[in-house]
Length: 167
Length: 213
Image 1 (cartoon, rainbow over the protein chains, first blue to last red):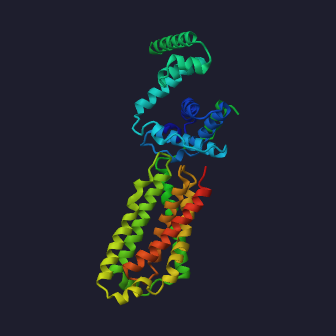
Image 2 (tube, rainbow over the protein chains, first blue to last red):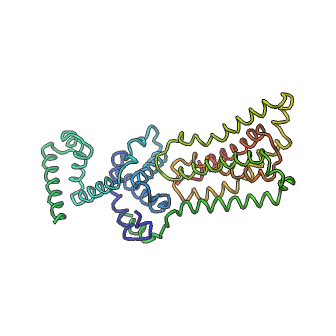
Image 3 (cartoon, each protein chain N blue to C red):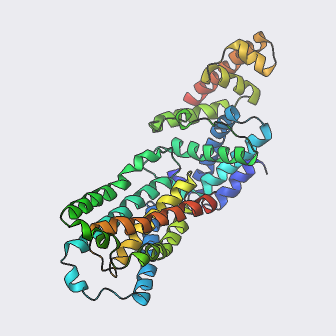
């Protein structure tokens, strides 16, 4: 982010590319329609870009990012006429997230993005959201054993990739 | 447009944002707005003729401290609300501290004054114009603050507009003190506060409409 603020186009693009999957995961958990999710991701990326002056370099990035995402989500609900409670600020990543935690999440998302989308989604649900295999299988409409196998293979592929990166 | 293409397009237009550029622009807007307000005062209202002796009086500094304190505290609150991070509005309660302090001074002054004179203390000579003039004088500063806020990302547009209006009222009232000859705390705590609060209400109404993004 800081290099992007300095006007480095490559770093700026890398940042936007890195946060896009985080935003997609954020909206997927909270917004129903798939086409709305990608619109919201794009709107948020534009806001991150045009309003980057509002980011304070001395403060953690994620609370800033997700506050923008949340604002865009509320705006979306307002336009589409949905009323009712919206996920609270408490659910957002803690303001105390350290840079290391942020980097770890970004690394993880980057690794997951090397897997097929469906498989990455299963792993996310199982290991990041803590759902049970039965629930995941039911939600994605596949058999339990198929889900298990897919997750297992996905994790194996990730492990292999980490070893490759390490060498 | 797909997201990757969008990212490339955005990255092509990236320009450097120097560190502290948000606070620098805030200072710029504050200075620009107060200069316009100052010009309005100098052209439309006479500076109080006794200004040279008045600056040695308690009343002059009491007014100045009160309004400038509101200006500083509300400007800080505005700067916080301009950043899109989760925020609790209750955290801004110190904005009300100057009002409480001045109310105490007003009560002390009243206790030292015969009851029959309280009415004159309260209305002074200029109560009819005071609040409206403060509101008008705060408008250039409010416009400058909105220019600034619209570049940032206030996630609470109404609250952001309200503190911007209150801050503009505080700075406008501080400059109005150059003209205003009133001396009692009871007058200031009523009519100055009313003028600044009107600024806050104007800011909240305008913010709700024009600070969305």
